[in-house]
Picture 1 (cartoon, rainbow, N blue to C red):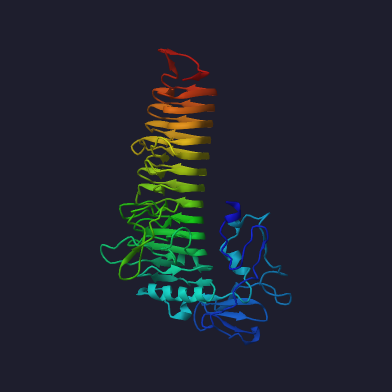
Picture 2 (picture 1 turned 45 degrees about the horizontal axis):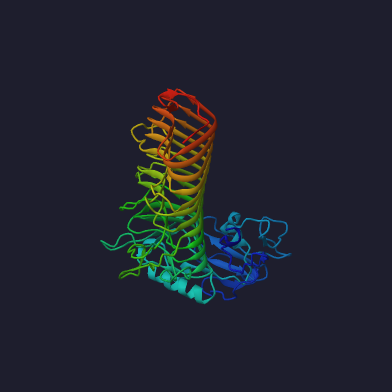
Length: 515
């Protein structure tokens, strides 16, 4: 998905060209940002986070009440008036051939804007984050105005914003907060809990015809009565630096969308409702009644047309919830394709750190550099006989020291045509360390299983596997178990304090293959 990685820029992007920051809309919200030469900037702002754009500098300034001074907010500067803190300024440009856009953070994007880029400060529209005034309708109407203007950056100063309805984000729009001090809450009527906190225009479209090239950055979700951010039938979305506290279902719920990147996510709680994974990759399959927005009067579901969620990434994350959710990351319903989960930490889950629904199909799932610590199970990719394709798990540690918590299998996968498991450690009193069913061309290498109550490597049935550079230690009944229809070829396998290491015709012997 290299050529389809979402950009939060307001310019155009061609995979063969540089990203053009100058190709932006020219409409400016006159109420949200005052323009003029630097000499005419007031000595003091009228309110905290007031913005002033110095046209001769190409710099936008923000009034900071705490320092009683104007501070740099954005803009590219000029040769005579560089960005504060620099001796010169070179325009930021992105060469798609050499730079991974996923590494570009929202602050870089803001600073790379031109003086023509609209910045909309919600306070200038009477939208207050006072924690008591419901502002969801006002935010929704402002986002409609921003979309008509061609998109822009919508800035939410520190505060608690009550979104009593689901505001819908349009094309080329970035919602930006001030980090944990910008809080979104979604009050909902009784029996209507769980409707989306934020979603996008075209959530009720088909395919990926909803809003595209939009994002949310630097905000905290503390909304125990609502669902979280729900891209639905959307394309090219970036959710960056999202802090997740209270929520009813999921802080992030990706529904029938593609090219969604979640980069920088921290969860302190799971859901309070019946489905309680902090992050979910979902699909609005036919006859699905969930996944809806709340317009202030009623719920409206996303279109159920079997559009798959595809080419999505969760990276740089920590899920450390204090309320013991079932799962950390939930892969839900048929149709998820090309999902990558990387560079993260998951703990405290009562079922699995990462789980896919039993029987649902998945294609091209990658889990890389993830630690699953103190969960009942690590990775559980539920039982299905066939139809799944391409599984890659690399550099993963699954460890549970709590014998009372450990249950089932540390790692379980089934139904895949092609799976590669490398550099994986499973350690804990799980029933079995690693279990596989109905999997063709499974390659296991540099894997370690310790502490399981029964089997270390259990190939339960219909598994064609090559096992190399593997170690099993302190496991109960068998180092390797090969069930009906399974074939195991292995080398470089060592056992230490394992029950019946390998049993063939009642004798312990070393296998080169078995079938």
